[in-house]
Image 1 (cartoon, rainbow, N blue to C red):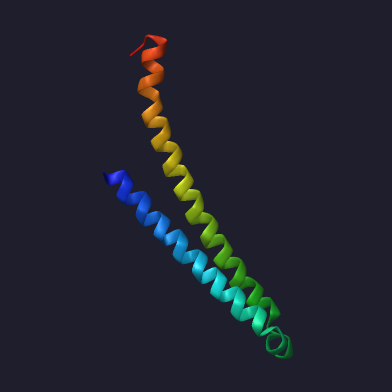
Image 2: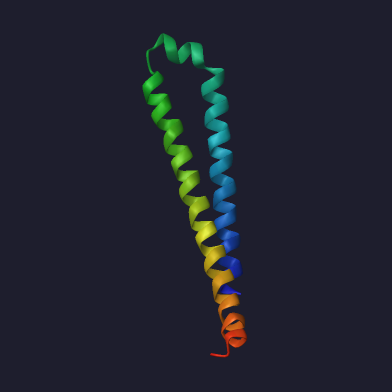
Length: 85
């Protein structure tokens, strides 16, 4: 039960981060001329890259938890098949 809540919370955070990334990219693509006019392209690229890194980190945590859960479920079965459990 704890695992399910954790993964659900992590999935919601991932979706929220993806929404933020989409929002930032839409804002930035819509304001390219303004940003270029004020020579702020580098700052915007850094902001966008940070959002991508945040999303990647959340996705990585989610995959780690899913793998850990799959391993923990498979280990007893594999042990019994090998005759060690």
